[in-house]
Length: 354
Ligand code: PMP
Image 1 (tube, rainbow, N blue to C red):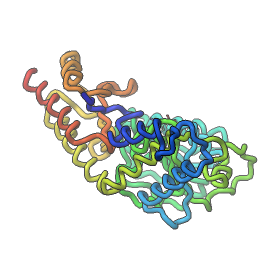
Image 2 (tube, protein in one colour; image 1 turned 120 degrees about the horizontal axis):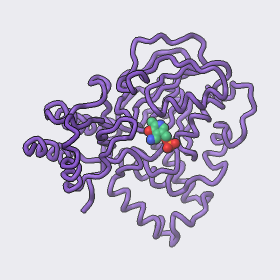
Image 3 (cartoon, protein in one colour; image 1 turned 90 degrees about the horizontal axis):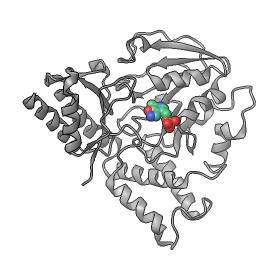
Image 4 (cartoon, helix red, strand yellow; image 1 turned 180 degrees about the vertical axis):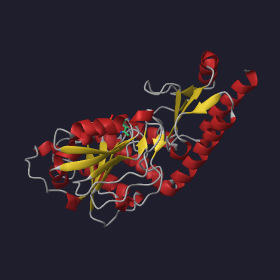
């Protein structure tokens, strides 16, 4: 039986994508060859790269607006470094909203002055800071749209003249935004986009080429733009499977349709967390993430019973991250409302039994 997979990432992808990707391992495009054995320079794979790039721009409504799409390696973690390498000349501003922002800040400090414009660290990142002042003359301002570990999500974005950079690893393609507000967006594929192994970067070309330092080729966005993400051998299978997932998003109504479904799922789970007297939510209500819901039992002694119940119900991946504890239900695009209903049923069963 297929599990209800609430894992934080790698995570659930559409079942149809798994099927098609499996088929391509055996025989890609009826070529008599596997996707794993063809040359990345073959026309079939060059087409995959191109379609993937085009789908990203189409789904984010960024076509014809000066953006380039890259599929790189090294995870979102390498982007913490590459962003600063390519863009930080003197000083950059960072919003510190969780573990991942904190790591991005650490890397940026190797390249210049980093101003922590706002932080929610003092409350274990259970809210998104508001009402802060953004300093003048920043090389860029960096934020994290969704905090995977703590379960908070930015609902509005800072307004600044500086280029706006955003780590959207855990909510890309999950909601409509005016993506033209951002000058560089990056996301590890392994949540809403595809399997682990590639990282999407969408960058407005005109912000590049302005720092005075020498940038090693492999870490220079311009190298990868110039070579259409083929400077070195790309992660062929991760890009192909991401393309299938992007197609699936498009065929299922695009980002707006994903958002509608994600709102329904989040509403269902958060109302159970709020109404069920056995549970409490972790993050500030107004900043709750539609992707990752963090919550815990009020009475820890029910843990054993609850854990056995959700496992029996075919639920996987519900344990919270060690820095928060409790539970985390990740509800990425491919997770159905039905799976969330299965979790909510277990939570209300527990209430009946307790
Ligand atoms: N940023 C965010 C928001 C994340 O959730 C993660 C991973 N879960 C990362 C960055 C790091 O990504 P990677 O493992 O691809 O380096």
